[in-house]
Length: 539
Image (tube, rainbow, N blue to C red):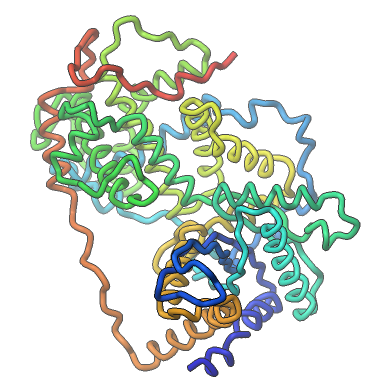
């Protein structure tokens, strides 16, 4: 077996070279691999048996989307000449966000209002993806490096290995060297950029690591940051009223949804948040239309027999839009510079508005990840920059988003800007996911291999094993295909949250959070949560 692994260990390199020969681009993503070595991995020359090891894993992602018609002249424009408003959320940007928030709220209404079932087929139509995004991306794991990204000396060694890989790949493919997009989570991005700055005064292009550009953060960790902010603002263990996020977590027995540790409980926290957001959408719709219950059919329902799918969607989004306009009114006032804090606010009404506004923005970000669209993503980035900055004045992600916007609007060529943004996504063959989520899967795979190596966890053995990952996966997939192997599910299907959402809706109908009642008191809520956008001052 070990001889076989040694035989296929160079397949990752040959596959990368062949892809470049075929005119494909590639990008590189990396992440740390931290694991604990115990008695099972004990070796005489290591010392302590129980300690943490810090390694670094990487993968090359073959890109299928090209933009040959766009200009390759960099920079697009002088960054110093760009007005500041280019990087700020404008009224037109907010109008666009309101439209997409309404578009996401419409299917929720179709799901929970029986009298809207006629619109189900129209809302289920899938949006067209960018040509090339429908093709599965090849993911080529690279050999693991015994480097700790917490040390800049090791980070420079990591980037040196990337530079050598790029140079050798282009040389063997016999094409002119190109710049390669690299990235990782926000902390990895910062360390990569810092390492390049340390080499900025070197004598040669290779030593200056000029081949590795641009360097970006990734979207899955941004999703976790936004969801974590949602929980920090809205989930308090002191708030036990039935309309609060924490109360619904207890009532619905969602024990895994730990708002204090979103990173390690992301899926559970996301499921709970989406259930609460959907329930608030239905409650807002009931209050706006004047319905005592979801089963009551309102008046003025159009005759849809002669309406096209596009007309049905437009009508439904038009019904939802006034609700979202009302929810985002305070943010619009902030942009105008006319926001004034209320003297006698309704904390329940404010809570509901925050759930809807921040929740639908998060759902919009998740929807963009599934259906990549550059204009929508940049628009959401502007909103998130304001929201994260308002929540925490020292937010690193707010600064990273500004950096990304500078690259997209000025520093990179138009072609490179589009290629870079589309490089943040990976088509797995079943769905589109963020590139760093794909890297998380590879890290999990690597740790599984580590556990099977027992005391043979050495730098030499790990490099050999990780070099064969791509070849072994290709052989396994080809064998399964030729033998018509049926892949069995490894876990049960995710349970429907429909009944839980109906329970939340019934509770909210009793409280009526969107019926503004100045001076309404909430005993368990000592301090009402505030919309982080209100902390931003526009001149």
